[in-house]
Every structure is written in structure tokens, then in C-alpha cells.
Length: 185
Length: 248
Image (cartoon, rainbow over the protein chains, first blue to last red):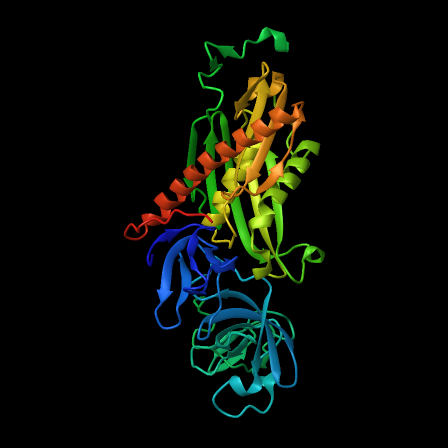
């Protein structure tokens, strides 16, 4: 049973014996596979799941690193539209929104969120709550990886921990990621 | 050419040497397109069809999105060089209809509620046509969906039955389709749940019954080929696993 190769619709087990896990569905007391992959049985929870072998759509979990664009800002909240998960760049996320609360932006006190983020910034963040899609940017490698000048929309360059616009000379601050401007996630 | 000009059977065999209840040779290949999330190339006799699946991804235009489920878009398109006389490129009445019925054949098995506000796009391109392109397209699309890892309740396989010279035949080829008396394409799950049934021409109720049974048998045979094709591809990625073969 465990490790067997299954296709969508194949029987994985019985509801009397197992709990339907990931990539399965139950119907009429039987658990079926919903994707192509290998059967996995968790001996502790008795969950029968299928480990996808095909190029399955991305599933977001606690601790995953994601990249998204700031689409809105509130008093104590940054709202992002997620683009992709790290390691799955060729499988974009579909219409997924997430938030960063002011308390999860960095490890020190944040007085004003507008000094650390701006609309249209590209942000790299870690998922801390996958149900409510809450993100955190506390770590050094997390934060803004690309930002644009609020005056002229030119892409900002990093200089001495600050961001400078090469076109109009405007200086801005952000919660910068160590990979700002490198083009790598 | 007139129907009376053609002899459909010779010594009990059809024009291409098949028996009445025999499928044309089927060749299938998974993952043929690097840019698509899932893809499949299929040859069913003279038909050459390629299917690509993208998604779940953002819906454009936005007003088409559904808040509780993903929408499925299916585009059936015949290449201008796919038939003897050049086909005018672009969508036409026939391809709109085939796109609609093929989408409705696949949609019942796709677990669309897992991906709200998104779209699953299926593109089917007919490179060479020889009757039965909709069934070939559905077969390729089902394998491409499985290749893309889209959650599904089960696979879908499709096959047609027809009537020529007052005899029921499985998987009609071009001459039998053009000059025959009936054509009955069906699509179904391996459990026998029919998701598409159409009929062109005329059959008596008894013949309809027999033709459906015949096409269902063809679908089961095609399902075995789809299964073999996917198992071959994915068992290569890891040590071969024992294969479970059971559907309800």
C-alpha cells in the first residue's frame, strides 16, 4: 500500500482504516487519490495522503518564503499580492493575498510603517500563519527586494543602507532585504 | 464521392484492416512542452493532437472569475494544415461547440473548489485530423491535467462508436465518419460515469445501447493506455513503485 503509485481516482484506502490526507478525497467510505503520486501513510495520525509526483500546483505552508508586491497599506498592516513561492518560480500563485502586521516587520520597534514599505515594492517574506496568510520580514534576508521612487517611479539603488533615486536624487528608507537589487530570491 | 461508392468491409475487415470492435493504434507521450504546467501528445490512428494545461492561475479578464471555484477554459483549435483542404485559421462555429462540450466533459472531475478566483486553461491543438479529434483532444487533455497535478476525482477517457453498412464500428476513421450512418462520441470516467455523449446520424434504440457499450469498452482500453503512459513517466523519477490498480 505505502509507496504505491496512484492516479486520480485510484483507491488509496478505506475511511474505516485511515483519515483522508493531502491530495485525497473521501466518497462513500472510500479514500481516493486526487493527484498522480505515491501513497504515504502517517502511522501516528493514520492519515492516508498522496505525495504528488506530477508538477502539482503550489501549496503554501508555515515557514515558506514567498515573493509579492505591496498593493495596499493601512496604519499597521501591509497588504501584498503574492507572485510565487521560493523554489517554484515557474508555477505562479493565483490571486493570493497576504498581510504583514507592523509587529512582524522587524525585530525592533517600528514607529511608522510608511518608512519601511511603499506601494509597488517587491517584498520577500516568510509565512508565519498559513491559514490567515500572515507574513513576517524579521530576518536579514527578508524585506524589500525591489523598490521604486515615489516621485518619479525610477527603480531605486541601494547606497549606505538607504535607497537613492538615480534620476531625481530622492532618498527613501525601507526594510531592506540583504538581497535587494540582486535579482535573486 | 458517394456513400455507395465505398465498400466499408472486406472479408469482415474494415478499410484499414481493423475489426469492427477494434481501436486504431494509440500513441501517447506526457510532458512534451517545457513551458506548460502539463502537456500531452497523442496519436490516435491518423489524428495527431497536442494538449497543454496552464494553471491554476489568475483570471483575465477579471470579471470571469468565480469566488468559490476555479473556472475551466478549454480551447479546441484545428491547425490550418490539419485537413486535406486548408482550413481557415481561427475559431469557427464547430470549434466553439467542441470547446464547450469538451470542457463540460472534463469539468465534472476537476476539483475546482480548491482554487477559488483562478482559471485552469486547457489548449488543444489538432495538428492532423482523421475523424475523432474531439475524443483524441479529451484524452490528451485529461493526461495533461494529470501531468499538471490538477486535483481530479478521476481520469477521463473518450472514444467514439459509429455505424457503417448497418454495422456498428468502434473508433470510426475519416471515411467511415464522412460516409457512415452514425457517429457517437462519448467520454467517461473509469467507473463508467459518462460526461459526454453526442450523436450524429441515426441509430435504433437497440443499436444506441450497443454502440454506447462498444464506446465504453473503447474508453476503458484508452484509460489503460493513459494510465500506462503516466506510470511510465513518473515511475522513472523514482524507484519503480508497486502499482495500485483499482477504481471503485
